[in-house]
Length: 568
Image (cartoon, rainbow, N blue to C red):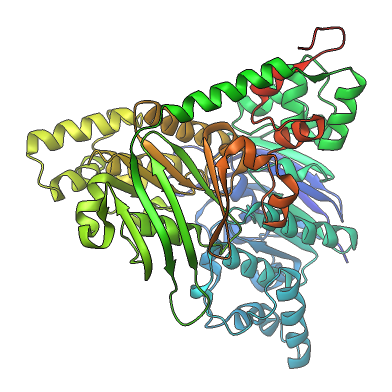
């Protein structure tokens, strides 16, 4: 049985916060609806989720005014146990809700607390682990799972409660593109069953076009509330509030067309109807530009030959990998969850010792050089900036590397100043790093690596957890560093980032490199990428249907010639 949601005049201020996180929110959701909630960081999205299942005000300190009712029950007057039977939640920090010694026990925890008999608990564990693609993982310790697998497990644990309301706070952040789609297919199946009301918060909105409603939040208030076509069609409003527009809508606005198309097939049909086709001369010019850039790369900095690695007696995580990375390249390492991307990246700078083959950095064997010396040539930024931030203030954090390498204090101050300027954090030297936003902490982590002045910068998922404005800021920074001479290597699932910024794509599957080449050439093999759990950006897929892979909206506008114009 589904439940309706009524949020009336809700304002909430966290304890010690200067401003409210929610400001007079009014939101009514009919039973059975699938509502997507989008917005920039600090918009109030996660706060709204916590309010919907009663964690606010019962477990999160702060001042709440207004009323939240779920299934007719007031969250103020209903116990937490009763609220979880009404509204299950997957947190943005999904690892915080995994605590058992096996995946099966994590999923069983909720049904056990509901007092269900053993056979029904077992049935739910089997059903929901299977629903999220984790069948066979029943005995695995959650700590041994990849980030994407942990996210699936958290979703299975919430689904096992079989609550009529399901609240998902960024449920796909650590998943590869096909993994994102599979989770959203689970959500679609739940919606189609008519038994669930679903609230889903997401930064990546392309897959949300099938939602019944989209709510755009900013500064704690509702900015837009309507159908996907009504909300996503307002491209300028989406950009202004830090949300990445749907590719087709952005393209149509740039071409001066009504932003009515939300999907690839629909966009291609409308472009064809308007007489648009690709200009061969512009495409040839783009190809020449790509070739000229490749010819400007410098010496080979990193050489990997037949590298292999396994954590134990199980299958190799990295298997017979050979590649060369030259000075000035911007390389993206791609692949499904568990394909070996991060493991390979950590071997390139000595964080993990390969067990087969060799890696040479500037001609020197990496294992012989050691991580201390390698870090002067290759800097590494972890996916979670909190994994490498530890100091009490920003200056000390960024100064740690140069001091560790024996820089004089004058050199340290100069390096810190230079690095903070490069990441746009000048004047923040005395700030507590842990008081900063995720995007700012990410910039501090990059600055701490830049301060040692490495030739190569490797970043693991540099845009995960950032809103679109923060993503653009991070990637523009990396482009500027690359254009200034740094070699950039990123591990990412975010395919629009690859199309807009990377020069070369290295695709991994089962620990092996299965495709390696210019991004444009790799993205042209769309069906092969889909089999590898990778989905090119919507703009690229539109271009592929029209005859050539396009990487950005700007490229598409340059290449698409309207009816009546000369095509060369």
